[in-house]
Picture (cartoon, rainbow, N blue to C red):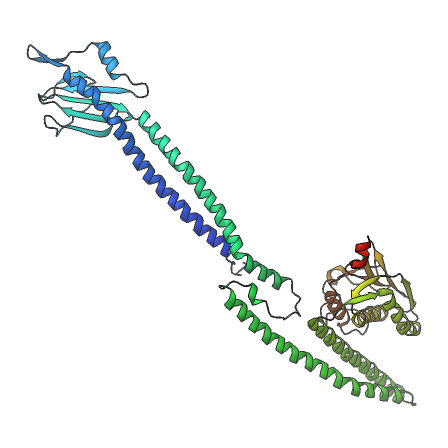
Length: 464
């Protein structure tokens, strides 16, 4: 199917094409004018030289016995017609049009009255030539023609002398235009870069002071749009937080009543239905808690909390006390291999991130499986990872499982599709990287969160 998306137009390309075409038109116009001037200069320089042999020839015409003849020897004619660059021909006709001397193949020129002359271009024996024709007072027609070699050399020299500097200036102008356009568009590129490097949750207004006058209306319009989006997002978050808070209490009460009801003696069919309702209540309560957690993470992302030094080992120690009892009840071996790993972060958000990773691992790991939490350093990069022996995540789905409410078809477990989305939000807030890979050749999942290396304290740097 043909791609019908519109082709984007580049302002830089349009400006440079416009400037380049304008310069090329100027160069073409300069070439035309220079060529015309060069041809006129060449004709002015050589037409006078072409007239000299015609005058000499007319001065040496004699009448003998009623017959006109040229009183010049063959050597004298050759000397008079000699030219180092061009071939020169001549012809003399009497008043009756009869040829007196010279090349008989030259056509007769009409329209000249005695004592006048004319210059014209023509062809002789297939070659372009410049001619001078003059009618003497006694009626003789003298023509002298020469090829255009030295005239063309002069025209070429003039063109080179004039156009080479013009072309160099044009190229320099194009280079200057490129630099000027790039410099002029730099503020636009800075604004684009700021937008591209923003997280989707960052709806803060752009700095209008950095925008040029031509872009100020667009930046102001964008800031107004961001303000409306920020207000709408705030309303959505308040609704989400309030809804989650309102749901938690009745869901907790409903879960307690279900558990109390299950302690009573019930018919098998009724117990089965009540157990299903109990599980559905637990899932709904967990969804409400995760929605509340997601809203809190998004709110923290917008408020940009202050990040302080946190040891990932302490975060994992706290998680161990919370999750080991649940792992034992599910007959899962939950292990911890912890080394110190300090990061700049928010301890509550990091705790929430790890809780979601461990919760996901325990939910999708079968009985008698293992889940391992690791912290430490890879070079100077602190990391935390959770590895399980569950069914694993297909390679094609690893980029999608961090999206909200996404679940791989056919996956067992009671997840809501929000756990890894919360993890991704926390990782982005800490400018870390999230990697999902297979823990073993055919099964298992290993999720590794790597953080930015901490800069050494200023005091240590000074002492170093």
